[in-house]
Image (cartoon, rainbow, N blue to C red; front, side, top):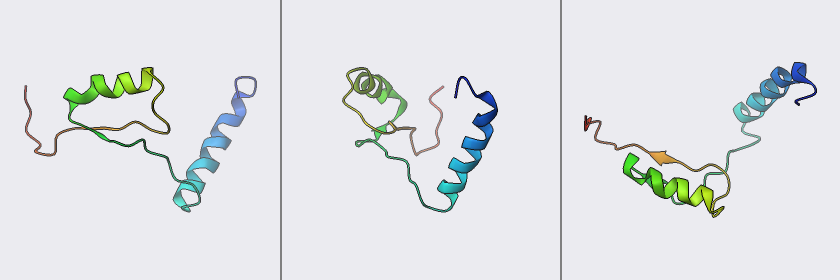
Length: 67
C-alpha cells in the first residue's frame, strides 16, 4: 500500500465492513495482562515473539486513579 496510498481508505472501509458483518474477528493473545503495572510483561512477550494476534493490557476495573 505504500505505492498506492489512494487504496488505503478503500481497504480500511472494507475491513470495517467485514468486522461489522462479523465475517472477521481479531485474534487476542492470552493471557490478557491485567493492570498497567503488567505492561512490562506484555512488552516482553511482544519482544520475545511469544505472542500472536493482539496483546491486551486491561487497566484496573475499580476506576480509582492512583495519581
